[in-house]
Length: 308
Image (cartoon, rainbow, N blue to C red):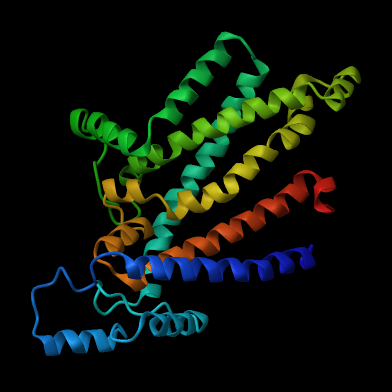
């Protein structure tokens, strides 16, 4: 297992290099610059700013300087958040995004997995139709529609919950709406994946054998069927986790949550090159790590796959 993990980590190095290269040139070639929105400054000050941030050098020269800086573990200073480095901003926003995302993932696995299993066990019955209809509704309504709807109903009309902000980080009432808005589509996806996979597994020969031995339906499902049925869910959650944790961009923006997603939006709008690059690299690393965790979990859930 150690050699497998080591090989996957080494194999991730070229992937990260490609991500850095493409992202660097894409953000630099985009129209506008990091100081365009500020008031006009004398040419001497503009030249000094460009010198400080190495913007006066050729693009390839800037790329090599940035690559050397990243290899040294330094994402550079932020262009728009004065006196902050990109690393500081990422580590300031990551705990908030992680709490928001992991809670949403936990709810998706718990509720979506349970509903999908129930739908599979009640296939073609009212419970199945009800759950799948709700799941399709959850999938078809995107976050940027669901979040304002929840805010309007529960925050504005009923005045049950705050409509924005993160409070001081310990007030749960500020977290309910963004977590629910982020979790609902994931619950829908997981329930549909679980239902389809569970139905297929329940028709397998080893499940028939377990039933023929007199094993109860509960033990058949929990002890034998669940591990095989959750493999597609685990496969889906790998890349999805990275997207949910760092990519809750819309939710963080709508609810004014100080996470990585909001920093990314502000960085892109302000042409904050280093901030956007830092978040992109951080996101790429998370994608690689979560995919690695998925591969390890595959081996745990189905040992036969670990040797392939």
